Image (cartoon, rainbow, N blue to C red; front, side, top):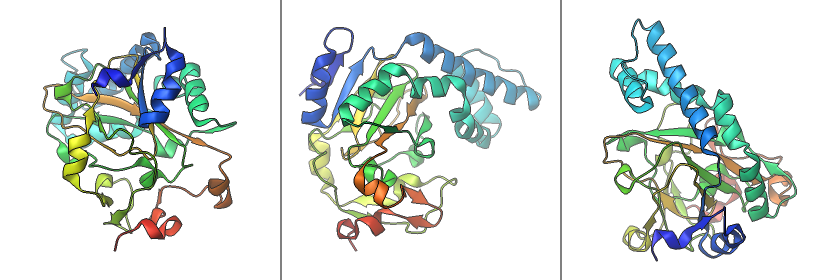
Length: 283
């Protein structure tokens, strides 16, 4: 099926979203977010970059966020990491994540009474051309985040994502069970990169690639992924950076999540997935 088969224009056919999401494990909600909110977030990110450059004794040569960010990284790549780490504190970032239309849509898809939005499991991604070391191979978000089993990941593009920019690739219908994995880094601690290599999906790669659908996005779209959907990062081969906000939404009242005291994800030196699902870990 073509990518447009999974796209629902929220202005005219929003009622179809739930059936597309339920059948395939994902859906593109077109025109879900106001463009002015996206522009606000981009403007705040640009101001962060400009201010960092000012304190390095430099002036941004442009008001283009992409080029200004690249200029900062050319001085020292670690400065780009600083922007990545603090971006979630921006009001514009948080307004997008908490957008009433988005949260209402997610709540409906999960059929939950109370949404959990763990900021520790949400982030801004800045995927630069050819920086493949930061990409995620085929995986399920549940394995990493260990939220409720009906949790939703949102992919919010801060600019259009064309196919050559590395549009996210998904395997339609792969959201019906927890996949087996090998744990490569049982003592992983976050903050040093390499998170995409903690697990290896125990599934024939050729089969996943054969079934894969890659999903270009436009500003205002939100790609909604079931936490068990198998997907991977795309490879950015354009001349632009791929900017996306990736919040996770969970069911705060999920029985198993509550029973383990809401313990989730990857804690310092401890990958919880193997504790909770030892039968899904391949030795």
